[in-house]
Image (cartoon, rainbow, N blue to C red; front, side, top):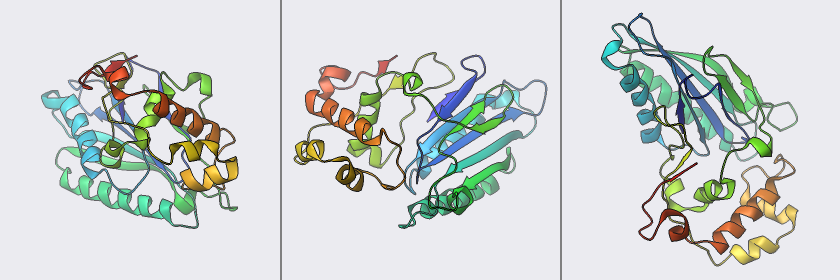
Length: 255
C-alpha cells in the first residue's frame, strides 16, 4: 500500500496485474478548512487483507481529521483481473465489491464513497482470455486515473528485496505500507525470508514450467516474468534477513 499527497509526488502507479486487482482511493474534504487530498494505491493478489484495506480507509479519515467539518468525499477505483479459467479474478472482485460496499454503509456519516472506476474480471477481459488493463495510475492533484505500464528502469529501488516479500509468510496475511504521506522515501519494512528446498529446482526450470509453477495466470504473463522470478529467487538464495534489516531483523530500510 502507498499513501501520497501532491506535495510528495505527481503520479502514483502500480502495474503487472493479471488476476491481481489494483485499488486506488482518493479523498478530499468538502469544506475550505479541510486538508489536501490524499491518494492511496494498493495491489492485492487474493481475496483477503480486509484488515489492511479497512486501515487504508481509516488513514484517510485520520488525514483529514477534525479539520473536515463535512463528510469526506472518497473516490474508489478498481482495475484488474480477467476471465481466467480458475476464477481467481472473480473471487477477488467479489470480495472487494462486497467489502467496500460494507465499508461505505458503515462510514456513511463520515465518508461519501463513490465507485468511479470498475474494470475488473470479465469487464477487464479483451475477449481472448487476457486482461485489458494491467496497471493503474492516479494523478494526485487532479484525481484523474488512467491505465499505465511502468518501464523496469522506473520500477523503484530494491526490486528483488521488495519482490522477496511475495515468498514470505508475512505476505499471506498482511499488505506492507511502502510509502506514506509523511515521508519522501520508499519504505521496506522488515520481514522474514529464507531459502527453501525447491528453490534450486525452480531456478533450473525452463520458462514454460516456471510459469506453471509460479504464476496464477501462466498464459498471459509478460515476457519478463520468468526473468524477474529468477532474479528474486537468486536474491533469496544469496541473502539473509539480517543482511538487510540488521542483526535483530527489525530495522526498516529507506530509499
